[in-house]
Image 1 (tube, helix red, strand yellow):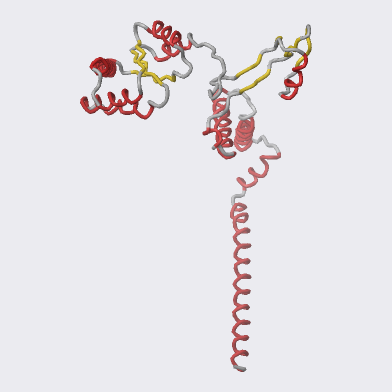
Image 2 (spheres, helix red, strand yellow):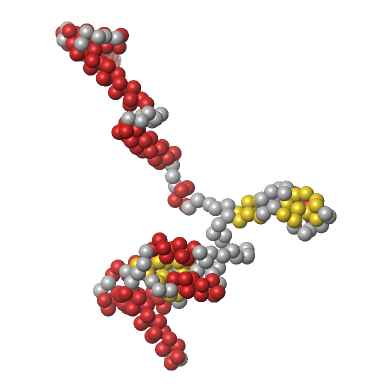
Amino acid sequence: MVLNPVKRQKKGQYDQKLCRLLDECSQILIVAADNVGSTQMQSIRQGLRGDSIVLVGKNTMMKRSIRLHADNTNNNAIRNLIPLLVGNVGLIFTKGDLKEVREEIAKYKAGAPARVGLVAPINVVVPPGNTGLDPSQTSFFQVLNIPTKINKDTVEIITAVDLIKKVFSPEVLNLTEGDLLVKFANGVSMVASFSLAISFPTLAAAPHMFVNAYKNALFVAVASDYSFPQAEKVKEFLKDPSKFAVAAAAPASGAANKEKVEQCEEAKEVEEESEEDLVAGLFD
């Protein structure tokens, strides 16, 4: 297929412009251009003029130019743009601050009428007001649970109605109860750590503060003649260290006795089984 010389020249100029921008600009924004009119796009270009350049085109042409430029310059980093060139998108090459560029683009955000098959990027709300419909249409609004009233022989919507609400991304649906508990526990731990560091009481840090206060009071009681009921047992152990050995020996002896009982029961079972085998052998 022979290309038109004019089209070939335009493609060559586009390829050169894209390669030049890839060399000059280290920061690239990929923006969706759905529902963006030509007038709105022109306003964005004028608003970004100076530090940024907006470039749009066919995805196949942009992918081809990026792939060839990466091969010629051995710059494999720009290949990461190729998988992102899906749908109606554009590239914004900039040398300025990305935050400022994004804020400048947001200035030209404009509403668009709803059409069949389009995905609403924001919440869609029907504001209250007069619809201009006659009272015979009230049944239509009742089916949709939209509160209305009759005002001057026309149907009027009383309160704002949410038609479309934002939905969560698919990743949110993969979260389990365990993931949420881990996130919550991490947050509580950070609040408790920060509260303890600045000695500011919070609900998360209160248990730790009580434990630390008890430890401090216990240290004072052990080091002095002052005492309180919770410290009596600790001071008693410190006065007579032999009680530590008695307390430790009690569970150990209990475990030993239990082990002996189990061994006796096992021996008894083995003896009974051997007698049964002997009786069975006599009558074989």
